[in-house]
Image (cartoon, rainbow, N blue to C red; front, side, top):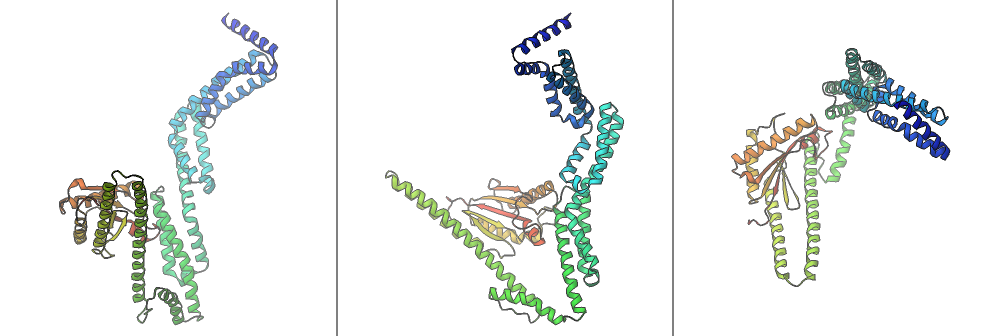
Amino acid sequence: MVYQSRLLKWVFLSALLLASGGAYAQNELRNTFFKDADAAKMAADAVNAELYAPKSYEDGMRDYRAAESGLERGRNIEYVRSNAADATANFRKATSAATLAQTALAQAIKSRQDGANAQAPKLSPDLWDDAQQKFVRAIQLMERGDLKNAKRREVEATQLYREAELVAIKAEYLSETRRLLADADRARVGKYAPITLGKAKQLLADAERELNENRYDTDLPRSLAIQANYEAKHALYLSEVVRLERDKEITVEQLVLDWEKPLRMIAGVADVNPDMQQGHDKLTADLVAYFENQASELQALQQEKAENETRLADLEEELSALDERLGGATAERAALVQRLEAQARVKEQFEKVDKMFPQSEARVFREGDTIILRLVGLSFDSGASQIKQENFELLAKVEKAIDVFPRSELIIEGHTDSHGGDESNQALSQKRAESVQQYMINAMRIPTYRLIATGYGETRPVASNETEAGRARNRRIDIVIKPNLDAAD
């Protein structure tokens, strides 16, 4: 009786709506019969049921389309209602099955996403297609309730996805190197430049080994691949030079003289005597010293420029404000003069500290009123944070530099290069900063409230991580001195 009563109500409502207007009537009927189906479909789409529960989702779509078609064609109301109800049930079933599949097949799903991020479908299509087949089969078995066999297929799919991901990563980072080495072998470079070519091949092997061991830390493999590319191209160049010499198209003397020409040109620009009587070692050392001095002078000029611009802006702002007021002008001008004197004192202190360190021990520079000691001469053993005895002399100079700035706040910053994992680099830089902090407390008797130790890992490089020299500069301890401008000399 209840069912018949509801059916009569729907028929009556349908007749009433159809009498009141075709389009409006159809919209109202759709809202009535499809409300639950639309909500169930939306929930199924939210959990990607089309992928994770394809049979139930397709059954739902079949019933849903049948209900829509029946409504549009004016079929029996019971036909529309029945198909919409079946669609609702199938979408809900799909939602439940998809949610279960995402939990049970989580490992394969993550491996699939990692592979997609590495462009495995494009760079490793065969392995990717095999993995996809295993993954689809696992989903089908899950939907049938065969959990045991679904998990077995998941393990197989996960392994294939990971293999496809690794192949894709290697293709991205190592394909150019492999192409260069293949070109070198075809050109018989090994006959003329075996050392350089051998180095390129070893670097490629090292890069591949690093990717095999930790595919997600690509900084080191990428760096090794770049070095391998360089060595491969260098080997191609050297082989051509050696071939010319062996074929007597150029003499060794002519070769050496040609290589000296660029050094002579650089020496001329630097106004350095190109003394190469005993080879290029002396000239190289002279040029390095010249450019280091140029870099230091440029840094000093940049700092002075920034300081002057900041001071000028502050003065203009404050003097403008003082000119607008008469009351209290004398006290404010006195405060301004006092601050300018403090800044001048900091500048004198900076110049004093700058003279304490040779370039091989520390680089000293300013950022506003802040002084930074970049301790290039402070080194640690690989992976270690203990301060070595050979660094005690440098740290004694650091103590004298700190004494120039009474009651200053001191921040010890630890930094690493990009090789190694992000977390391990962060932890190592923090340990090294804390090691220096503890040394300052114990050996320099600096109060703990003046000291802050912070590790930044690889996040703040000051040079390129693509070269050994750049990475060496990035592995550093910076002592940041924030002077107390109210402190006396």
